[in-house]
Length: 485
Image (cartoon, rainbow, N blue to C red; front, side):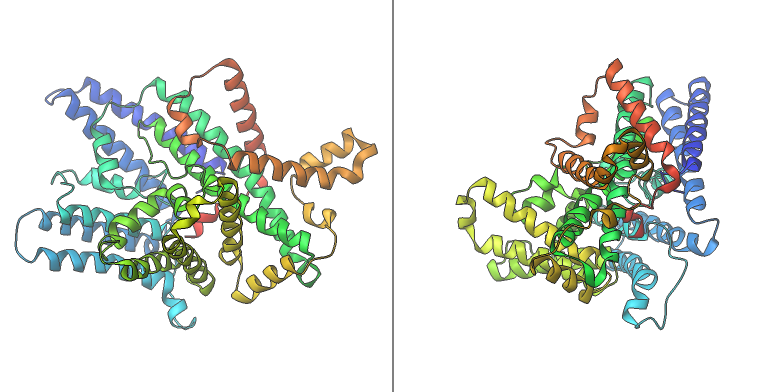
C-alpha cells in the first residue's frame, strides 16, 4: 500500500477516526491519571493501525511478516537484558545486532553473494530501513544513551512499524521518537501544516518526479542512438527525479505523521545547494548520514586516529552506504565515488578558497555524474551513458524524450494551442526541468517550512489545487524509488 493509491488515503482516514475514538475514550476513562490514559491509548491505537498497515504492505504474507516480527522480539529481549545490569552485556548486544544484520543479508543480498543460486522471498517491505532502525535502538540502549520503559511494548512496536515511515524512512533515533508519545495528543492545529506538506509532497512525486522518470526511461530506451544532449537530459533528469521522489515521500510521511501529533525528523535540507560532497551528505538523507556517523564511523575511530585511518573509515562508511541501497556493483561504485570525493576534500583544504559558485558547480556536477551509477542497471550501462555524454554531437530528440510525460497536460496544450503543437514536447521538457530545478534548489525544505506554516486562503487554494491535480493523476504514478530499498 503506497501513498499514491486511493487505498492508502481511505486507510489514513479510518486510522484518524480510530485514533480520535480512542482519545475520546481516554478522556472519559477512570482509574488512571489523565496523562497516562492519553499516552497509553494513543500509543495502542497508533501501534494497531501501524501493524495493520504493515500487514497490508506484506499482502498478508506470513513469510514477509516473520523477519520483522522476529527482529522486534530479538531487539526487545536484548534491550531488557542490557538494561538489567547482568553480565555479558557486550555479547548480548553483538548477538542481537548480528541477528538483525544477518537477516538483512539473507533476504536482500543472498542472491548477490551466491550469483543468483539462492535467494529468500518475499523480501519484507522496508527491511533496510527497519534493520538500521533496530541497530540504532540497540546501540543507544547498550551505550546507556536511551532507557526504555520495560512495560511499554506497544511503544516499541510503534517505533519499529510507525506506518508513515516504515517502508522508506526517515530512520528514527529512539530519542527522537519515544518522548513524543508522552506529549499532548494531536489537535486541530496540526491539520493545516500537515495538508501543506502532503499536498507539496504529492505534487513533487506525481507532477514532477514521475514525468521526469518517464523522460529518463525514454532516454535510456534510445540505446546506441543516444546523443550527447539526450545523455545530459537523462543524467540531470534522474538527479531531479530522485530528489523530488524521495523528498516528496518524506514530505508526505511528515504530513501524515503530523496529523497524529508526531514530528518526523528532517531528512532533506536542500542538498543540491551543497558546496562539497561532505556538505551534500549533511543535507541528503540526513537520518541515514546520522546513523552511519554514530553507528559506524565513530565506532571505527572517526577522525581520532590520524589522517590515513580517517580516510579508510570514510571509505568503509560510504561503501556500506552504497551496499545498503542495493545488492549490485553499481551501488558499490556509487558509494565508493562519494567516499573518494570526501577523502579528496579532506586532503585538499585549499578548496575552501575557491569561489562559492565554482565549488557549487563542481559539487553539483559530481553528484549528477555519481547518480549515473546509482540508476544504471550495470557498470557497462553506466559507462555507455557517460561515453554518450562526452562524445559530443547530435541533436535533442524532443519527441522521443517527452513521449508519455505529462500526457494529459500535453494533450490539453495541443488542443488549446494547435498552431504550436510541434513545440509541445519542448515546452513539456522545459517546464519539467525548470520547475524541478527551482524546487530542488529552494533554500528551505518543505518539512522546515511546515513548522512555521500559517494558513491563508490563497495558500489553502494552492494546496487544494496541487493535491487534487496529483490525485487525478494517480492512475499513472510509479512506486517511490526508495521503496525498493
